[in-house]
Image 1 (cartoon, rainbow, N blue to C red):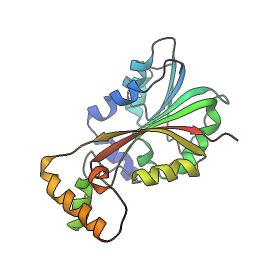
Image 2 (cartoon, rainbow, N blue to C red; image 1 turned 45 degrees about the vertical axis):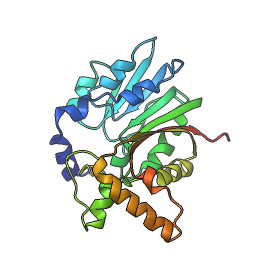
Image 3 (tube, rainbow, N blue to C red; image 1 turned 30 degrees about the horizontal axis):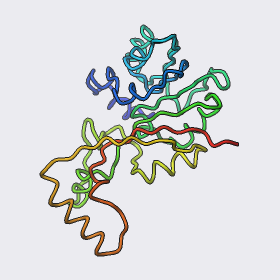
Image 4 (cartoon, helix red, strand yellow; image 1 turned 180 degrees about the vertical axis):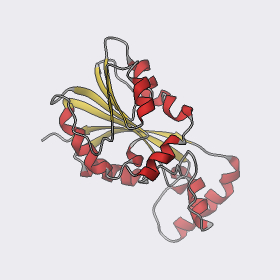
Length: 229
């Protein structure tokens, strides 16, 4: 991670590191007792999961957040997941979480392959990933803009951008099968007319894509499991 990238992370508000995505929490299976949270922030998600005898490990690149996470989780590593050697045992985890993390990596494909050996045979990758195809970013592009922001779909610390199609390609190339996708939708009445017009334009030109629906997809929560070898 470059010094410029680190400076952007230092500018993040405390809320950025203290979040516990409720959608992620609700998708944790009771039988998952050993979990690795990559990008664990201050450990609030892991704290919410530390029940029923669960063991929660975390990895966090931002030192101040990692120090706080050490007070909440069973084990915390501070560093860049793309650069560090992982000290875990083969098939140690029932679940590895990437909560809004993959889009921040230089090579998320390699990272998914890197953590794969540490999943149990029936282990799961649980990730949340923003959709660059949301109508808000489509309209920005049509207006000739690709402007970064402090947070959201165009967060200035995002290095990779995904649609649902590219998410499937990401996991497939890393040796995973997507088992389930939950869609978080954000729509506003002000977008309705332009979304409908763009959908009709796609139909007119023979492009088979349900833009009316996909353009409201803001984030995808993905469960993926390794292909059986």
